[in-house]
Every structure is written in structure tokens, then in C-alpha cells.
Amino acid sequence: MAWHSHAINQSCPGMDVVSRIIEQERPIISMSALPQTSAQTSATTGTASAVTGSFRKTGEPDISESPLHPRRKSRRIMVGPVPVGGGAPISVQSMTNTLTANVPATLQQIAELTAAGCDIVRVAVPSQDDADALPQIVAKSPIPIIADIHFQSKYVFQAIDAGCAAVRVNPGNIRKFDQVGPDICKAATDAGVSLRIGVNAGSLDKELYAKYGGPTPEALVASALKEAHMFEDVGFRDFKISVKHHDVITMVQTYRLLASKGDWPLHLGVTEAGPAWQGTIKSCLAFGALLAEGIGDTIRVSLSAPPVEEVKVGCKLLEYMGLRKRKFDIISCPSCGRAQVDVIQLANAVTEGLKNVTAPIRVAVMGCIVNGPGEAREADLGVASGNGKGQIFIKGKVIETVPEDQIVETLLARANDIAAQMEALDVFDDVRTMDYEQARAQGLITLLGRETDDKFLSHVLDQINDRQAVAQVADTFRMVYTPFHGTGYQLIPEALRRLGMKHVIWASGTCTACRNRWSSTAPSPP
Image (cartoon, rainbow, N blue to C red; front, side, top):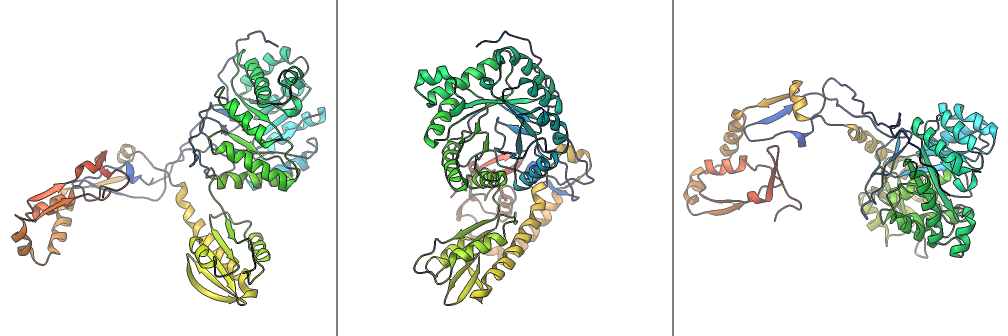
């Protein structure tokens, strides 16, 4: 199956990321951007900041790099305002299970998915009524919409015209796709719309199925490569690929193989994963294995369960993989014969009571004193239960002992207090920085002269009670001075010189200069 080459304009309106400066009266200046010498100490004024706009409509800053493995280098596409690939944070997707033509029900479910942390949502478009509903859904959805289209190519063009951020197309399921494919690519390019292509075990080309003896990793990748080349041969590159399978091992092997073949962004999924408990296990195993190797740019947990459950699992999975900012987490023991309290009931009650907490608080619920104090010490808050009582810990320190029937309410009250304090500190997460030269040009920085250093040094030296004793050993005393993270790199040597110390070795090699601000290398020098 080959396409005739068409010239396609690759400039996609709406694909450009426009940085927006929010003007404030007095920006905060990044101290790391300021020159700090002994002769020139900087002071800043004001309380606000200059900030660039964010990609993400749904919110909080996510993490781009895994602590386990460098991310695979993939090219970037855009799904509306959400970047996919190219080092962007891994996004969580789901799919509505409403009748798309039922606009109120579909929008209600999209709102629930958004609240749960979903970044991108897919809607099924099997009928003309569904296609006709897309403009209303797109206009009111808080997150980007992907139209899921099989068989009818005309719905693809309708979805693009409706303003969908992306379209999922299955070339194998669309009649005469080799004829309409170039037109789809041109329409998508002109509208700044990306595509998702790919294959799963159930839609594998019959010839490839026969050639490889089934939906093997090699067969699935061969099918995906065939589709990718169909698009690339006409100059279209704004697509991601998925190669799903219901078997965890096959799925992992397939994505590993595909990842080695090119730089396409990859959408991870275990298709038909099963009911909630089984599908969660399958998805966590498969995604965990791939994400730990840096493979994957967006995920969808596929569950025979309400779609919001897919999002919850996906978000938590990314949190525990270090790829999304951590929220509420509970540590609870599995219960055993040592337990002197119903740990299962207690842990469930605490989890339910704190389910809406977004602060990164970690709460430990322990059934006895064997593990209790130790685990609670590592948590922000915890309880060790026994003898009809509960010892409430904060960072390992017992703050109160309460009757067993008051454990839950006490933990919840304490946890909400701690969470409120954490969230109050989150205002600093949004603080942005301004370039030093820009801030100085706006008169936001006051430069203090050498006289400030002299006053400081005189004050420090005046604290030495016996200057004469110091002078007596100045000729013979030998010392090595190592700046601590650059602090005092210039001031401390000057103070020692004023004291008359003659045999001082300056361990200056441990420090480097950044715009005249000195800092030591990590780890700290001995």
C-alpha cells in the first residue's frame, strides 16, 4: 500500500507555543542569577514575579525526567496545548464511555476525568450524530479532545473541522485509506492537528498475521512501521504510535522493539486489560517496566471500570514512578497476628477521609509497636496502635495518645492541618525569576558598595576578644580554608588577612564562578 507524494505545508497554525509574560509590579529576582561579590552585595525589592505561560491546562507542574532512567529521545507533537514527546511530562489519557451524541453526559464525564487529573480525553465517533456533536464538546471541554474514528474517513475531516486537538485513525479500518490518507494529512497539517496511529492484536493485518504466525512483537511493529511510513512518505510527521496487546510480556517486548526503530512519540497501553483489579496490575507491570527504561510519552490505563478509575490509577502510577508530583500517600501494614487494632478498617477510613487532599502528605497507619514507631518516623504523620490506644506521631515524635475510637478523627484532623500548611507553602512553586540585567534595567536591584563589606568585616573582627593572642600565632599557624558551597569565598579570606594569618591555603579549586557568584561542586568538598 503506497501513497503518491504530496507537498504539505508543515507550518501548523496553533502548533506554536506562545510564551505569555504576566506583568507584575515588582518581580522577585532569582538569587542564582545575581552577581554576588564581596564588593557588590545585591538587594531586591518587591513581591511578585515575571512568568511565562504554561502548556498544561489541567495544572500542576509535572516532572519530565525519570529518576530511574533517561527518557528516550522522541520528537514532539502537540495535542492542543499539551505537548507529547520531546521530553515533555508524560500525560494521562482516558476515554469516555458515554454516547458521544449525548453532549451533556459526555461533558459531565469529561469534567470528572479532568478533576481526577486527566490531561487528554478520547471520545468515540462511530456515527454521524457523534460527529455532529463534536463542535459543542470541543468548545466546552477543559482538556483537549481526541476523536476516535474507525471505518468512516469523512468523520476524520469533520473532527478536524470541529477543532479536535487530535484524531485517532486506524488505517486498516478505513476504506480506501491509501486514497484519502494524503488528504487527511493535509487537512490535519493545515489545522495544526496531530494524529494517533497504531495497531493492536485484534486489528493486525491478515498478511502480517500469517507471515509472523500471530500478533507477535515483530508482527505488531511491522504493521506500525508500515502505517508510519505511509504518513511520512507524504511529509506528515505529527503523529504518535501505539502498539497495544493484552499480554503484558508481548506488550513490553513490542514497545521496546518499536522504540528502537525511530523517534516517534509512543502512547502506552495494555489493551483489553480486564476488570479494575486485574487491569491495574497488568498496566502497572507493563508501564512500570517501560517507563523505568525511559520508554513512553503518554499513557492510558485500560480498565473494565468507570473511566475516572483509569485516570486515578494512571496518575498514581506516574507519582510512584517519580514522573508526577506526589500527592497524599498512605503507609499501612498488611495486618498480622501482632495487630491489636483492625488495621484494614483503620487504613480504609483514613484513606477515604483524605482522598481529596492534594498536598504531598504521607500518613502511616500501623497495627502494633513492632513497625509502628519506625514507619511513623519516616512519615509526616502516623499512628502506632495497641492496648486500646493509638500513639500519634509527627515525624517520629509522639505528640499525643488517644483512645482507639478516636484514632481516625485525630489522624484526619492532624493530617488536614499539615496538608493546609503544605499547601500554604505551595505559593512559592509559582514564583518565577527574572534575568538579572532585565531587573537591573528596571531599577529593581540596589547595589551596595564596598563600604558594606568593610562594616561587616569590622563587626566580625570586633567579636574576637584576644586579637593579641591571634597575632602571636599568625606566623606559625597553618590552616586550609575550604569554602562551604562558595559562602565566604571572598569575605573569609579577607578577614583572615586582616588578622595577619600568613600560612593559609585557599582551596579555591573546589569552587566555580557563575557570574561572579561562587559555588562549590557537589558533593561538598571534605
